[in-house]
Image 1 (cartoon, one colour):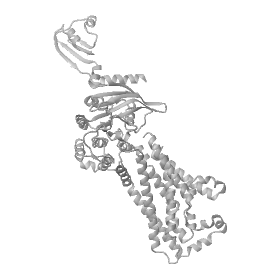
Image 2: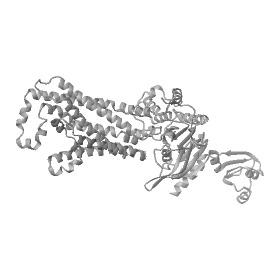
Image 3: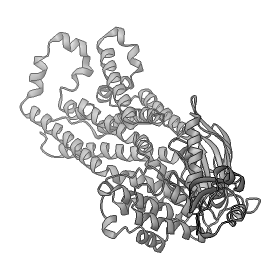
Image 4: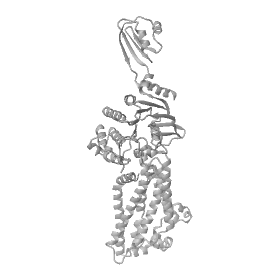
Length: 271
Length: 325
């Protein structure tokens, strides 16, 4: 049985390898680029000029965490919570996590499940592919940052430590885990991949906006706790140099719950 | 490493009883909301036979097949393959089945070769290369064809690839859903030969179809599904017997008998279809003896008997279905 699970994993990875390689290169390139932007601003004394432009009331409103990214380390770290990066990673997670739904829709699953393979094998396969893909993205992103910091950086720059970068990547991993679980759970009860992906995508977008709303508007703060992004606090990682265990626990718990739900549900549904 | 595909092993040694049915359905029902797809379906498919599962579109053939494969869960009833429960022993059941789906969901961007390779490796046995090569030759799929992406395949080529993947692990039971859909006549013949070979080697074939001529040609028994209910299970010769034979008798000289006299002369199992002074065309149910005895009074030139086709019987059932709606 294990051999057959690996056959399925290999099949899935072969199918997505081109997309994974391209995305990994782009994300690593983006991290490298940010190190060079930070270096450029540093050489041009740009951080002090940017700081001078910000009015006091904004300084008060955003607090020290909000201003933390206006430093060499802040700009370098931006690649781990930039909306483009977040969208790419959550989008990739949704695309992979709906693979089983897609196979049910296109009936490839009739060919695989006509063989002695448990239905849950498909969920296990998807989880493994998610882990491999997520790890590849985050490792290449960190490699991009490391390469960028290893060259062309001013001597007086204060780059973020390796620990901070790793924690930022881990923080991103918890978000991806959460959305992987949500997508798996939605996908396994859907008959169409596009429907599952759209629902999850809209949910991700709306909860992302809800989190922003909650941070900017006090009355929405309570309801914004429903957003997974509420528990993603990269600025806190930068300023405190630690990853909140409580936040990570919430996101990972949601991810695991979603995975368990999909594992159970696929055994009960009609294919 | 898996086992190499070899002789069929329909039963685990530990399974009690000998020679169970290849497929046994007991009161299988499946409803989707208020719609009944299959209703209290019960029948047996014997080991070593080719069983044709007939029905109009939407009759419930594919649903039944999917229940056997545990892709769909029945609302009521139980299904068994070689005595194993399709629900509780699903993996063991599927280890004994080769399956050709009606809708082939191949990845279009994969080559035929890569598809066969993945599907072969998902089996619990190692597919015999010689067996695969023989199937590819029978289905006339060349190396060049296999190296092409499936998006470049015609419907018939996809079907041929589907047939190869269904037979390549050499399972004791092969389930085929509309196997000749999209195949040209030559390939249909090749498939029929493959089915007959499969039966000769002791395997069982369960095929759904709505092509009556193919069922008549290769199947030992048929089951007719009508609106989710089993309308008929019988051997093909027995079904043929249910239909009237057409008999044409030509005479050496004019037969001078009026309608009333003819009605008195003809046995009850005969029905006159056409009549000229030199020839009668009749439909006869059952034995021909009484008709021949009646006709022997006149000087017979020739007698031509046309055996009924399965189609004639089954169309009656289909028409009943249409009328019943």
